[in-house]
Length: 125
View (cartoon, rainbow, N blue to C red):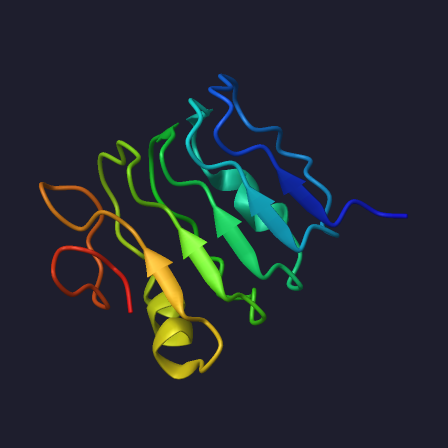
């Protein structure tokens, strides 16, 4: 058996995420903790990932291009102190053209993440 779900939400965990998460994950839910560091490890997840929730942590840096995850339904990056960068255009393209990718959330105000697919200060549909 391969690990399919990692759900550690709402636990006040403090750590950096390891870069070697299994590519078999379909759901990664680590929201509302105190995880730190960058999100570079997201590119190690597989294309079968359908849900990423890293909102409500202390991640910094840029949001990586994860547009290869064509099965994605939810990706939430809001409530993190991202200091620069933008939502990759390829991700916005996937979000705009997909009928199944229904939630893309990131803070798009106060100098946070810039995003061409943002409305009302939040990248969300």
